[in-house]
Length: 429
Figure 1 (tube, helix red, strand yellow):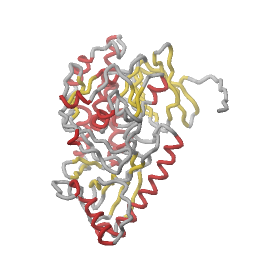
Figure 2 (tube, helix red, strand yellow):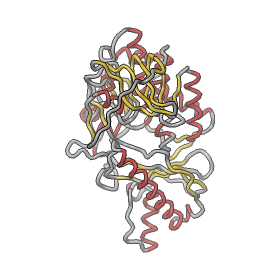
Figure 3 (cartoon, one colour):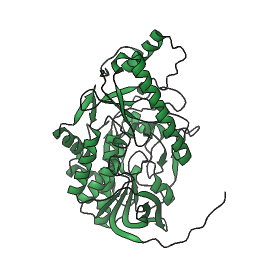
Figure 4 (tube, helix red, strand yellow):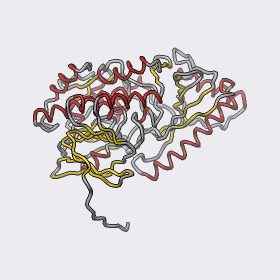
């Protein structure tokens, strides 16, 4: 490969106590807790709004929030107060535009500096200590310096660029779970039955689609995914669908990611066409939008001071530095099949996420939060959901503030102090 050598001075646009990269669920928790802890905090986000997969990816429902308290419960309460919540079976859903506005308000009320339309470019590292980040936006390339950096990119981009080690995918072949482009529909005469539906693994929508295949004589129809979910949203006859799985693409390769977005839109078109043509409940339905970003279930898992294991989950492990309890099952969307591995295969018990799993090995003054924390392939398939990501973010922001208060690095900080402070702030462990 040919190379181009670039040499230039980069202006430093700001100095912060805490810099959070990525404004998704984990980034929201991190920025709010760090700023509420009295630290000057910058939140950097590539889109023009917060929420990440909640908003850019249209990802519903909000899984595994019920036993968290803290910031994620605050978000749920505020959505409920605005009357912009709904449910699909036992699954809590929310209005996406309301989430955008609500998160803006929470950041402004907590004095977080927001920098939108800004892409992370590189980590500034000196002798294995994270010192800041380089970004690109309409104003050009800029540097921001921070005492503690928190990686909430989902993909662990900041940690990886800093030199942290990581794992990807299944141990035996590195295959990752498929990506999914969520899509929103309206004017449907359909609410999916999730409560004890008896046929085809309990999935009513798949049952209706299989019935249509047999009724219409479509023996060659290829099901992209056998567990489709049309999740009801606030508003009349409106829902968001989790169905279109893109397999065999590397979410860390820009070309593959581009191809995945294109493939995802074709799959959405096929799905909507099928619904409207063969399912009477959808005959007048319309496609409102697809996600601005395809949903990525899995990419890097940063190597931390502690790796959450399958044994931890099966035994319901508890740690003195357990920052939250995760009870969501092991949900593996098959990398090389069209279904999900049954949760019953892994009879887990509610388990702790250790603060040490947020602390990357080898790099100082850096924390990670969200699906890129340190855990095995099966553990990641459990804790990757957004309720857990917010709680991890709150822990990372709380830790960052405590580090600065006590003049310790994240690695030196006793995780029990994080647990104690989170409890004071209303979190449950």
